[in-house]
Length: 381
Image (tube, rainbow, N blue to C red):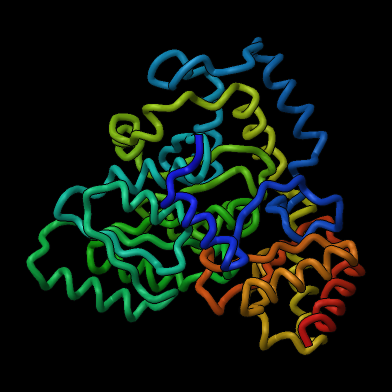
């Protein structure tokens, strides 16, 4: 059966904008595009350890058999949630099937009618979608602009609203690679009795002494209402967890629809999460990643590319190349030279802010970084 005319028109619109998404096999090239920051997705030690965990606990299930509120709450969940809570210095953790599911389940359920959610304008789609599924009114504040956030809080606290105010931000923004002034935001939200939520997807495993995230690194655990940590990036696994109080965990088990109405993660996925966490303390890949981040920024400066790159000290480095056609062309040129770098197109980012998104890894060599940036400078200059 054919698509409706409206569906066909939307699809044609994407083609006209040169922004049509397509599923492609991952290229066998030098990796500057995956989220496997520490190389743990390819770590045989984690693979073997996850199987040992299953065998040691006589867990020979391929699937979880149902939602966690029915038959799917196998005992590995309790092991993993206790480990995750300890590692991140949180009172409790609740596992979700993905970071997207976690944000949907949290943000659609916590704010009630009459409450307000204030979120950074550069927030991930999962945050926006979760908010849109809820009943609270939501307003965005300018990216990393603490003064604008303050103005909005004061505006709504002085108005007719008598509900709670939730503030949502990310510790590392997925499309910019930059960080907010989280100390200022946490101090502000606590002083004005707001509840702060921090998505740590791209900070988990990357920031903090052992990869605990930015909130832990700055000692802000007691000032944050909820954290979202995900495992499909630096941990090389799958799934996510919401960190917070035991009462928040109980609330989500009862009211988070993306938790209640879905089949739980299979035992092997949970065992892989446990195995990945055991690799984080003292992992040499952490040092190698941060050495590569420093070297990349040095080479950006050396190749006179600072004006083109967003200022970032994280594993995500973005070069602004306006125009879908132009950024795709540069990405194709790099691919022809053996480098996989992701072109981020509008409407994923605003028109005129299209970019090449470099993801750095512990396993990238300095020679690879040196060459890809020299090529980039040639292609865009």
